[in-house]
Image 1: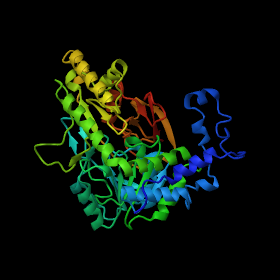
Image 2 (image 1 turned 135 degrees about the horizontal axis):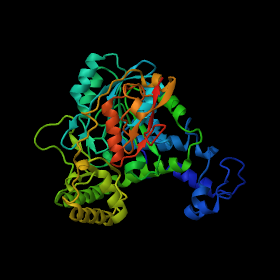
Image 3 (image 1 turned 180 degrees about the vertical axis):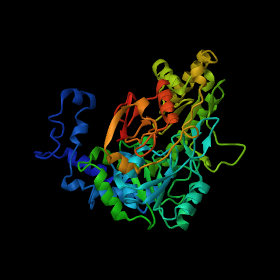
Image 4 (image 1 turned 60 degrees about the horizontal axis):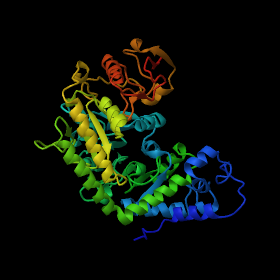
Length: 489
């Protein structure tokens, strides 16, 4: 057992920030001496004294032998991995590296169609061929859950040459599929199970939370430490266990997708966040779960509002656990879309959601939230319900749109082929039945509606126009106004 109370990287950074010396190395602001005054006024100069480069005492992220290696070893023990890598380009680079390390050009990878755009980037970079599975879908709530073990089993029977399976666990809504059953299947085929666990870094620290991906049998998992724990934005981790993953390929892949000038502020925040959870994780998660339960109970009692809960009446292999710190509130019975409710709560009540969808608002309740936050959230919804209950029903609000059952998808080219193909930009109305050459996704949550290589269909175009009209923002594509699309020429 390692001493989890230590913070080797944070301590080394603190010592170097305090050392008096003449700096003739990057960054150019020289520990804040050259920083602009407005920036210094906002942050103070202390943070810039610690904005250092790869000095001898601070180790090297791409060939760690000192304090970074020690910090990563501590993290591996805390999160149950055999090896851990710190990420400064977010979980995005971790997912990309996972695909690059397991798949080459023409290799097949099985994954859900509702993957994050980072997985599509991984397909483009690697040249892998996606075998997409439709996740289990709740047509009443219009929410996609996880892919099922049966779907994975069937896909592997049809594609026994697949090199890997990638699963999203949990989903943006906090829903977890039967990852243990999926792991049993991938182990039978002796291929790695990769997990996008961006929103599950806290699972290891309380028994009332879903089973962590590694404990469920995953070979590799990527976690956004910054999303639900105490690291700085963009700071994430990649964990591996077992021998199905070539760790050298992970290291080399990360060198392709991470900055060669990593921020030591981000790296030190990972070290500190690990120490915080190793020493106080269960207590912090107990308090977080209590706050979440209070919010869930009180909001569910407000007329015309409901919250996402575990299915009660029948077994759902795509929904076997729910992260109770993730709160999804259905607002459609108020005659509002989630986008409209999001805007009202933010502007009138100073309550800001993680993301909005057509019928729902989703909130992340984490160790940083307070009882005052929960009170403001509940009071915001209480007032919203009183003011809008049944008073704003329109045809627009009753439109039943869903991404998972009404849209037609067909992959004509591999994402890599389409991305690098000669392309042209056409008015939206002229793109029906053409092959898409770019990623098009509402954000958040960053799940692509179109990706390079897919045939553009009438149903997809109508969906994009309708969801944009209802308040969603579109990202990933050249024209975010969505008047044009890039297609293969």
